[in-house]
Length: 311
Length: 223
Picture 1 (spheres, one colour):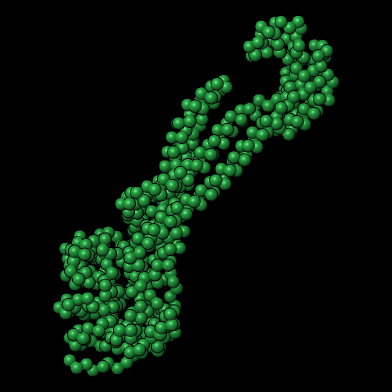
Picture 2 (cartoon, chains in turn green, purple; picture 1 turned 60 degrees about the vertical axis):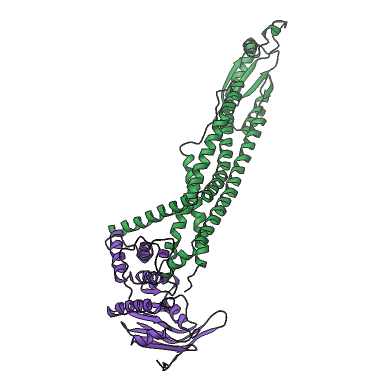
């Protein structure tokens, strides 16, 4: 037999097993459907959790960009002193840029944003101090470095108050980290569940085809040959489960999307939920197929070894 | 071609099936394996098909010492031994074609070659044209012939049969035995376990007679 022939035969045998296993699954639609649904839900759950974290990160990473320090100068500070202080601040290591905001500018902005402009008119004097808005330069923009920088700035003359309210950003990041861990944990547990479900289905399938397996072994079928259709069976069920998980996630996003849009609009944000990317959805679908294959391999290897022909 | 050398076989339940059994079948020879029920006939066939391993002693098939075969080599070994069962062990949910083609499918024979050889094998057993039938649509004799077609389709040098005529009436049994003789005539080594007295009288072939797990002299039966 020439090599191309051998390869062609190899593919033909696999194609037969592939289609044969698909046909057998189609002949038991209800059992197949149940297995696929269980796998689909088991995969959709970690995928949904993952998307939750990814979306949370998309929101909070935007906040990370705006991390800055506000250095308020003493009320008695003159314009010249303020300029001096701003220059001193800008000279510090870790400071990207420092913008000086005069009390008048501050009042104008406050009037514009707060919506209580009329009430401000009633004030006899401008109550605002000079303000220096400090944006840290990249290596110094972590929450920890920010605290250190704030402590440095407090030492500068005429600086009265430095606000670096980064604690809440830190908390959100910690929550995201925790959920991310949870995703991994849930995914691992559910992956084991998928293996068990596929394994059990394959075990039942093997029991149902015991006679065929025995006869095949009697006439010289190797374990690999006998196992092949079961591997494909597991592959199809896993693939079906993966596709179902994908559909469930898309449906879930479609159902939640309008509400999230409404919510973010209420906060004046243009944020909207993101779904699975072109890199991510193949992982869900392919992961399902791979888990199906592994589950089938484990079950088939274990159970087929126990079936030895009697004569 | 088949050689038993002081073979001792004890099953895990403690039953001693064979003790010190030695015999030899030359290449191209045909023999009946006879003896009472429980004498060890089935054990002999199971050892040849490597469904069992001897407790002691050696079994040679096709010039190979079966004791030297690893587990992974057993499937390839079995493809060199055609086996016919009393209950024929066909897959009832598959048509005749699939049943007969099974050993070829395992061996990876291309479809066109498969078609040709299935037809040839069915022709040899007189069932050409029944490819699409299902086993349960066939008579007992026809089912057994399908089983024989499956056993010989890989052209194995050795053919063994366990009471192949046990469920058949004398006329059909004769037909089946004629088939075995035809295969033997083209050089296949054939060992048929049977206790069918009519057949033993009718076919003048060598008898390997075992009693209590040992080779014994062939008893003279008053015909």
